[in-house]
Length: 539
Image 1 (cartoon, rainbow, N blue to C red):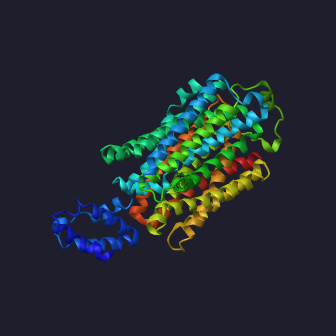
Image 2: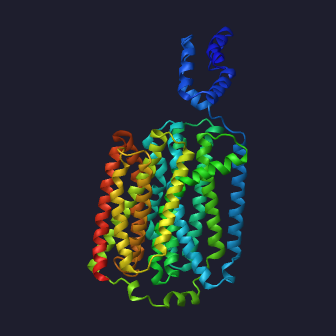
Image 3: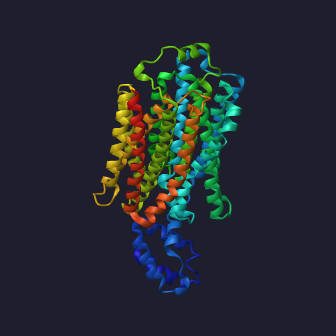
């Protein structure tokens, strides 16, 4: 086989063909990529080309392009999937228009839980969308001819749409939050349009296969559709938060916010797992033997579309259209115990409100940095594949879920939760130095697990304390204003984190990124310390 590769330029020259024109050359490159490493390929072919300088061309780029041919099953499979999505959405909207729902024959408790589930699930989907392309954004951007910093933009652009949604929250509230039915419609509409935005993303990925367009236009379309998905996802999450607050008794608010932050933290890791699962189940089990960067980008987007449609079905079929009288009475009964209440004066409310927002900024930037930096270090420094990197984040997600379950079973008292919050934020600071390359390679992943799981749980407790401590809707520092500002700050932090951190790793290396993480987590710990002091004095 190696002899054939070396002799190929001579054979082609004898027949008056250049290597670029020969179909035999393509077949040779494909077989060569199968049997030898990339470095050996470039070396062998480079020697062969020296025999005829007129036949030289960019061998690594061509070998890379030919190594991943378009699978014949992919267009048919994706077309069938999109037709199924269209039929499912049409059936759900037809049922909504006709008033068909399972909520009318269910009890008030199940309707309330369905509304809370919609809030938690939309938060989960938002964070999944942020990290959906973590493991494939770097090779996909390279395939399109863009840098590592540009791959960070592709990874974080849903935050841009989320920021726009937060800026337009006043108009959204005027249109959707005036009635319970309007809130419910906002959730359904946001989920549906988010799914359609990702349908556009999948179609944009396949545009170069059917049309001669520039890669710059393709990259711009990918960023645009991802940003639209972030916009509509944030709209759905805002509407779901208004819906959940209407349906949740005051004594359950802290647990609800802790669970909500747990969903954010879990989703950050599940996004990478979604990529791996999509590559395994959507392509390999459908008869494909390999996947190109285009297919690797389409697979997680398709699985994300399916999750959106599934949640849309839950909202339309199980969340009641109106807040029933029995549910309203249930939300007002059972006054909370003194240990479950937090009464703050106006100045303390302002401080707790500010520190909660600051900690959300720090956490979002830190987690976003961990995602993109660990992915880049795993693939570039350690040589892990995108599939393996996705499973690594899956183990981090599992650890996060176990930690949040432990918190859920802890005593629901404000003072104990406050001490737990301070401890978890402190551990995050202590683990940051283990990101540096002074330790064994696995220390990076141990540090990531502890930082992401414990500090995300601390963030959920902090959110719950703020929600309980600030005044009701209509006052200066209300629950709704906190949720809106929290989402705005999280979106801004994650938007900046991906390109900034990948650029930092690219220029300053792993140690420069580690020092930055240490400073960020230390700043967040100072905010938690201040909040803990105020809460401890009031308990």
